[in-house]
Length: 112
Length: 112
Image: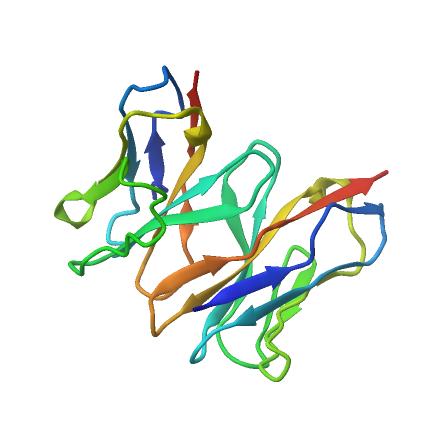
């Protein structure tokens, strides 16, 4: 079946603009994660959705970052007033309850 | 909170050498443990997993044993190949908190 799909795969934006990144998880997966991976760095946790529970937003680096998950499926990560330090690969993963997570290919964001 | 610590890279080996990448964790309860691999230019994919103490996960010649007494999940391979060059991430899923926590990643470079 289809895996986790992220769009766009690449995004170049000007500093100060808002961007929206989309994640389509695997159907039926209740958990959805967003991570950020800067060049040569590890994974930085951003936000976690589990079913209908309130999301864990503890990893969001500033109030310019927000995410929502509509209908327990598609998720959108929004970055307002982008800064150059926001440049990174943004990874989405979904998981069926308590097993391993499946990752999308990521969105490479470049802020110029 | 939960944490995962893995050896820093890069690790550089010659083909057919023995590989060990150390991973230790801190977590409440009884987490599931994972190794993910990220090949150049690709997304993360699950390499192997273990869900309870003394379980051994294995895949593609790689192995890791869940050691509760030492809170470790070291990754090993008896004979590495150039195609194993990638970044390896150790991770844990805490069933109590429903959170997936990653280590910082270890870059492996295998030379012919």
